[in-house]
Image 1 (cartoon, rainbow over the protein chains, first blue to last red):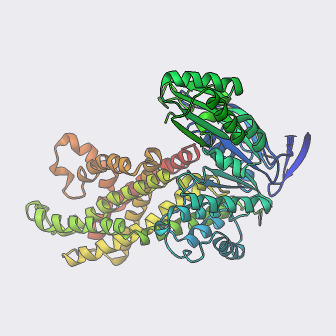
Image 2 (image 1 turned 135 degrees about the vertical axis):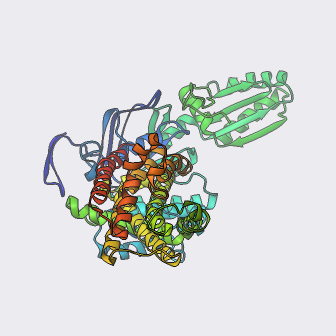
Image 3 (image 1 turned 180 degrees about the horizontal axis):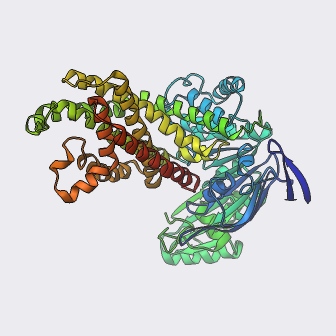
Length: 342
Length: 263
């Protein structure tokens, strides 16, 4: 809708399109030299939801976050955060956001409390507000005991929690979390997930990037799958899951001959979600247990017994294969982005 | 909504942000004393080497003891080498990613850089004070008034401050502490040694004299020397201040521009 908006604190009148979404992205393009990091992406994030950008290294997720947090200018397209244009009024945007994750560092020599206090000052909070807010965050993030220790004595999980806490000091309505759990152990990851869920229940809007399907599934209301600078799918987590399947079943036969026969049997049951290679047959389904029983009984009736059998979550590789039909890439210069080969 | 939506006026905001960043950098210096200690030890070694190792051979300057010729040069040499540390620290910040966070905050762009240079100027004041004490201990004497000596130190600090902006820019551009260090030394060494800091320019070959006489390290060393020896100093002091102000006026906007531009 077209409208007039007065920007708090600026006294400026703004004519133009104003979106009701917390984050609006339209046709963003960004090129670094020869590498097209973003090839035109669009998405909207409604208020008080978590939006996940899911994709491998080099897909363009971080570039999108950097543009939205006013660190980088887009070559084409536009983006708004809380109704403010990221290029037109970056300062107003900076008053609305918090940034945490792989690239937003904290000072290793400062204590936890000193780091958060510094961020509070630089976020232009009044002094009297900062100290109680810092104490509150240290408490909520389980860092009260470590508050007066330099960060270089923190574990990886503690540093990451402090990093997210730093983004929250000014209570920003919009939070950007760039791969917040990359490199964390399972326990730290689960703890951080809970903290992120709590944020949204308190009214924040979160844009999260991740390489983990499970993380996007656990946290995001809506997931956009990013591949080589483009969004290849944008849907709710549950819709995406039923489209992509949640279980991968891998059947390994004794030899290639048996593999081919097994593939033929399986293809009669599930036609489109099956891949056959040598002695291995792989299928992805959102009704894993049921399909497994059907497939095994069909194989048995043909006298085929698997040598090995595994049931697991689909990897990001397999998700991309389904979405893009893209083979994996080596990440070489002539083939940036895409799905990394294992 | 944010706790408080306060958009500061540009000047007050920039000062507030500069002091916040300077405080952070001073805490860093205190917590990692190694860097600080080494920037202190290096000039002390220079004083002792030049005073006692080369001093005998170099004592060909008529009228004054070599230590009184040497010490003004040591001050300028010390702040010039010391400024390299600023580039290394800035590059470390670029590499660590903390600048990304600063750039996402509603703060003055100049604050990150001014805060760095203000903190490092504080470090430079300490180094200059220490070198003064070491100098007095090895026989350095002020031939003019204490006031002239203090003025001379202010000329050194002004020169140092302009250099801090040069190396801030170097650190921002290179973005890697090792490269910042490696790139700085070859630039700094000719400036410091092909100068009047340790030996009179008149002893150098004539092709070198043109450079050695007018370059900023020489001019500043000569200004300090004239002030503490009670010689006519006006011309040298003016030239030194012009160099310092000129370097600052070119490098500070350049550094801010480089910082604002995407890393």
